[in-house]
Image 1 (cartoon, rainbow, N blue to C red):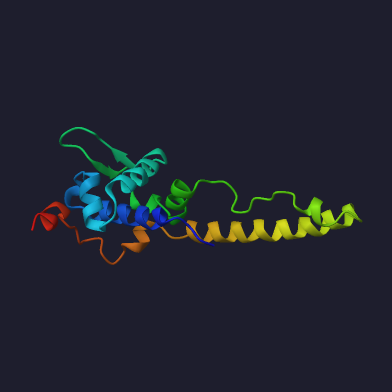
Image 2 (cartoon, rainbow, N blue to C red):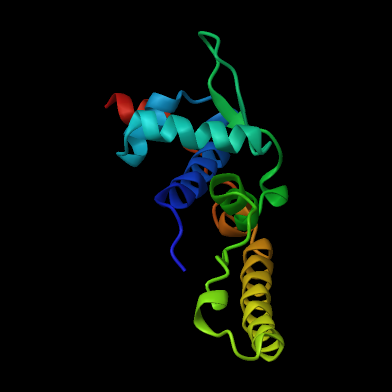
Length: 154
């Protein structure tokens, strides 16, 4: 399965915000400089994270982006869903109607097995993502905070 590059960017935005010294807000432009990605695209990603309640945004002069909840309450699935949406991975266009017209009932039953396997795979995938939180990723670095603004000013 392939997911959007925004998922990776979303994960690292959250990691950067989690490691920000004194949890001070960071501007989207600074985040895009740190990650060396397009500011306009990253702005879209941070907006999706905000809508999902993962980050909070403040457009004031001293504002920026901060985490909206503790890292222990933000899973990889939360970020994945914020960027990719929660629609099913598989979409079916009923092409089966064009392929086999003889014993439709028997074919439908077999196709339902295919659909069920895709649904099970998607469920397992999402369960796996839900098991890892951002806090888990940072468990070795919880005492290490970074002043990202100072790093980029150099």
